[in-house]
Image (cartoon, rainbow, N blue to C red; front, side, top):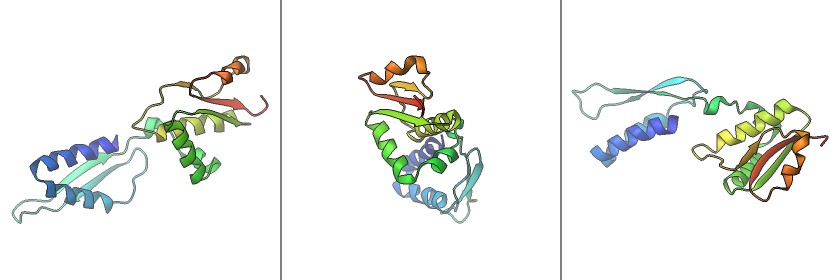
Length: 149
């Protein structure tokens, strides 16, 4: 991902000279945020007058190819942050919605937001009615159900 790409350059510079990290971080912070899938370049001004500026190119891969738009249209930022904290503390979460599309997209978007962490427990974005007794499972889970269940 983008974080790994940036950290590769930061670590390489850190080993050369700790002060060499700051120009790359400054250059990245001056960039406007790229859209998912965009490639962007960062120019790092040379500290030596006879050397050319360095141009680094990064690609922001879409996080599991998941759009976050539906999630933030459905929930406000405080709710999303609370849900992320619940996921990271391995709670049992049940989501419900009238729309299977909204339900599935929002749950997948939340899972994408915990990157670089991974959900290691039960994950059923849309639970079939025949498996409703899974909601009594004692271990952490993320399960989505239709509102009428």
